[in-house]
Image 1 (cartoon, protein in one colour):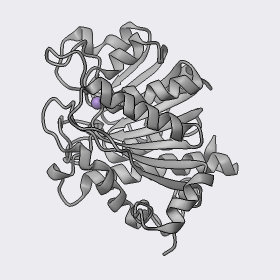
Image 2 (image 1 turned 30 degrees about the horizontal axis):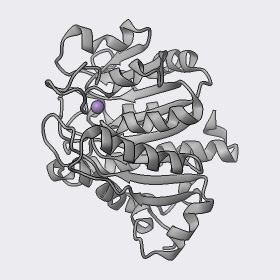
Image 3 (image 1 turned 180 degrees about the vertical axis):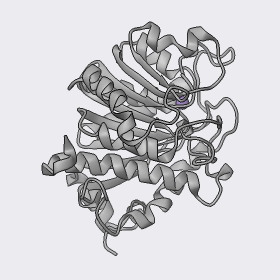
Image 4 (image 1 turned 60 degrees about the vertical axis):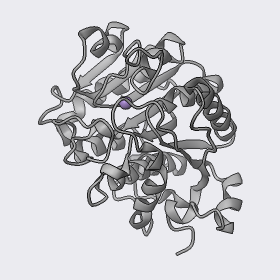
Length: 311
Ligand SMILES: [Mn+2]
């Protein structure tokens, strides 16, 4: 099978995978931390199960982009993280390890809960300056505290904007629908960014999403862009294995349309977070996550190759 899938590459005894990473333009890394969740823990097991679910994605070309990312991809395995230290210390570890990888590769990180994204954005910002952000989520993640604690998996977007990591006008949130006070739910819009709620996107798919996609492309332009995918943006029918599921979410095909059609943005990195395999059924969630990561990587490899769907 060769270096046939993310799972295969995750075998640390696999000589080809470990040797290949150094020269590969793209790298995958797990961030197995879930110490900042509000509700159900378990996302620390996301990386290994997403890799396992990638097994069948690796036999051929992506159906839209017409490429396979595997010849361009190495697996940096999972970050070594403390899991009983204050969140600020965990994030410092994540940032340092992410910075080292980002200096050498275009990276995709597998969470972990969404608190890890703040550390990843700090590393990306150090390299690229204020970023555009495409943020798929059921939740706004702009709460100013975490149920009395200063930070958690629902505060990172607020913190990223406060720290200037993300340019407010170039921040777009897609799929929001959870309960919450107006000030938090509409914070990004109040700062000048864009929000497309799950309700606004109901019934829109394929070409029906073109006006939304055009608006996003025009707004974000060619600014370095980070994409963060909280798997709970999907309806629990498509992704039940997550800590904080919210009914009436995006469909897999809606999300795939976004990922395909936004590939032409100036992407500098991605994460896929909040996959909690213990709550999954029939690998629905890990398969969705693996397919999303594969689609993102295929889109970026297509650009590298000058393939027709890259724009
Ligand atoms: Mn989130």
